[in-house]
Image (cartoon, rainbow, N blue to C red; front, side, top):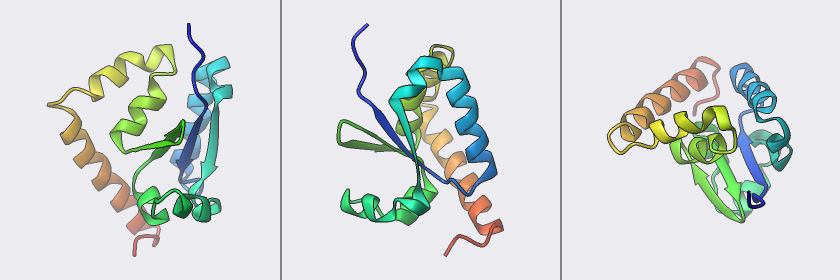
Length: 122
């Protein structure tokens, strides 16, 4: 198997569910998880701006960086999930052309409701 590039995951470290997802991912990823660096959006706002990413947009949608290229939303989840054997089938499924836009719509709505409930949506 070829060497994979490290990933930087820009996630909402304030969100308990997001932290729980991170812990679950690290547990499932095992050795592959060592190639993933988790960056709390609130602590890396300047870095995100330097990369052309609005920190508010990074709160609204997961952003993953690989080799200098940043993916966001469902594409970021797919990139992350492909690293974990038990998640590869799910990565394939959520990437299907008919399903991907619907999942994006559902995910965006869920995140906006969560941030609004927490008083963090402008």
